[in-house]
Amino acid sequence: MSMTIKTNLPALKALNILEYNSGAVTKENEKLSSGLKLNGAGDDASGYAISEKMEVNVRSLDQDRQNTQNGQNMLRVAEGAIQQSINILTAMKEKAISAANDDKTDEDRAAIQQEFEQYIDQIDFQSISTYNGKCLVDGSCLGATDAVATHLTNTSFSTDTTASTKLTDLVGRSQQPLGILETDKLIVSWVINGETKEMTVRPVSLAGFDPSGNPTYTAITLGDLFDNTSSLYSYPNVSGDILYNDVLLTSVTAHIGTDGHNGEVTTTDGMPAVSLVAANVGVAAQIAGITFNFFDSDGNSRTAANTVFDAFTETIRAEDYSEDNSLVFQIGTKAGQSMNVSLEDAGAVALGLVSATGEEKFLSVGTQFEANAAINVLDSALLKLTNEQTDIGSALSRLDHTDANLTVASENTTASMSTIRDADMAREMMNYARFNVLQQASQSMLAQANQNSSTVLSLLQG
Image 1 (cartoon, helix red, strand yellow):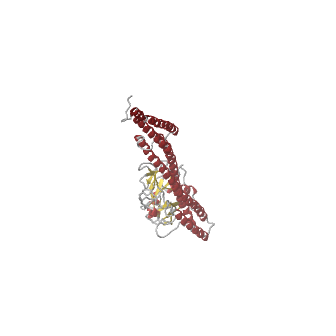
Image 2 (cartoon, rainbow, N blue to C red; image 1 turned 90 degrees about the vertical axis):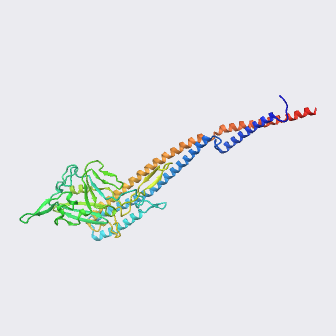
Image 3 (cartoon, rainbow, N blue to C red; image 1 turned 90 degrees about the horizontal axis):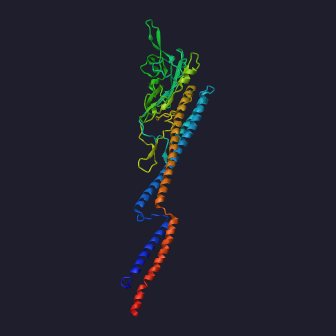
């Protein structure tokens, strides 16, 4: 091999190897210091891009989990407020039953009424419960709804009942006669806008007079009670308020009506039932409760008839028109991957316990008649709140499953990202030791290569 001094090729080769080994040691030191296999796009361009996208996804999933947990906490606040209102309504029903008993004087009922009004005020106070300053069950979190009327449905009548069925011919679901006679008396009471109304009617109505001037009578039908064209209202056969002004017979089929979301509502078993509807839409016209009481000629209660007629329950809740203000929980990493939860109004007006107008009229237990009517109103209010509890519970259950799914997704995505980005510390330590030894070896060889110039110099001196 020739000996040169202008170009020291052995030293140049040793230098290049030294620089490579020094760079490798620096890289390994960076990996060991950071714990990452990829510290920049230059380490693995495609792998780095994939891992960055995965990191964004993991952080998004973790925020989704936080959203889900915050949503659960938010709904639990609403659930707590509703539960307390249910407790109050339960106490109110107990007081109403007590007031309906004639061992109470009017003074006793007046005292119960004062307690009632305090209870109602507390229900209103609880309806403005907030989470992070946001009211939940005051009606401000309703989903989109058209104005709808109260619908009450009774599935205890025979499936072949029609609007033209005479009261005296009515039978129950199992074809048991209700025992209503022409000499009986029916008292209908209903509560609308905080006011208790009453109508008294007989199962037969004055139809007219014969040529001799004697009155003639005709048996009234179920539909007659709710029809302003009925002969029932043509003569003074009715005392008190007029039922059809507030309540109409909407159907005697399986179809009940349309709710605020334009959804068709039918009976749960798909069988015909008797459905009533408020004469007007909205909360102010809602029927908070309706009670039918049949009495025989001696003033005794017709138990069989009253039991069947007492089975009217609310199937469509009265609502005013509102925009969609339901709660939106972002539970996905993409736009639109959200969950909407609508919370009904749990205030006293929406529950039918107080008037919706400026004149404050509270649900009354001032008389035995009013106390008896209040029992059905409270049953209806309890049904509203227990249904709301069910909806909230269903949403909480869904959020539980969502949280579990997000946890698994975050865990598995993190594992995939770790495979791409994280350093195998044992392997990198091995590589570090190897390149460190090679670096030292290349330094020694560079020193040896630089001795070539000294050898040439000795030849020139000789």
